[in-house]
Amino acid sequence: MLVPSSPDDPAAGPNRDAWKVLREWTKPFLCAFSDQDPITRGADKVLRAEIPGCEGQPHAVISGGGHFLQEDRGEQLARVIVDFVNASSP
Image (cartoon, rainbow, N blue to C red; front, top):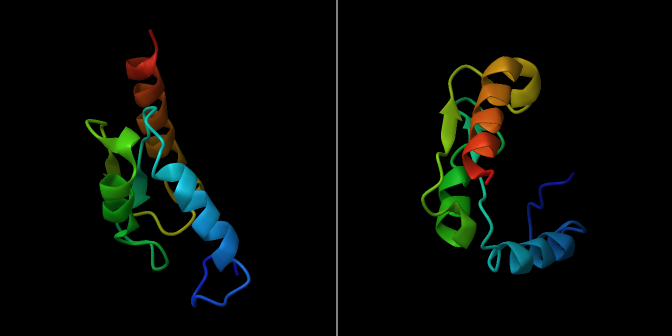
């Protein structure tokens, strides 16, 4: 229900509003996706192309996880996030 499937979907308006913000986002932005997510597979390419803060970041595609990557591959995801935060910290 959170992923709009048509322009008149109730979640479409808030989704468009979020994209307005994301297209202006210049702070570091990390994409970490699963290679087996049936819902958002491939969306990382859209995010990387549209969000300025994605440029030059160490994005990750984690093998073997599904849509709930934090549950399926929690340790691997945590390592990606910790490394990102450590690299981004002054």
